[in-house]
Image (cartoon, rainbow, N blue to C red; front, side, top):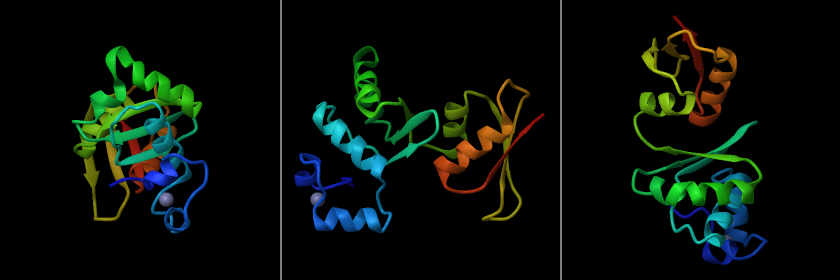
Amino acid sequence: MQVICNVCLQSDILCKGCGNRLKAREITGTEISAARAVHKLGIGAKFSHVIDTEKDIFVIASAADVPKFIGTSGKNVKKLSSALGKNVRVVEKSEERTMIEKILGVHVIGVNVAYPGEIRKIRIHKKRINAEEASRLLEKIFNRRYEVVME
Ligand SMILES: [Zn+2]
């Protein structure tokens, strides 16, 4: 799915249709900026989501699009980072556990879910990461509740 229409991609304003999608929260402001930057830089790849966090902007894309976002020797991701003013991290859309390992840079021992819709417990080995911060980051990316537990 395209984030915004071709007209809006090339302009700084939003048409009524795209404006309504932003109001309905189907798309975010960060996704619009990212889509415009991707278009302007001629990267020629599509993302499924873009999540803005305190430190980084996560671009979630299919396996086929990830290499396009990264570019030769990381050329595209560097350009995209400077265009968006934050470090861009490209993550392949895949199984939850694989994505978490990539995002947190840790090995996941297990994912425990007591009930659907409940807090998802992510068990990892003791690492120098802040479990609380890691939990909040995952919540932002996956839009559900997490608790990172170190063993
Ligand atoms: Zn539009």
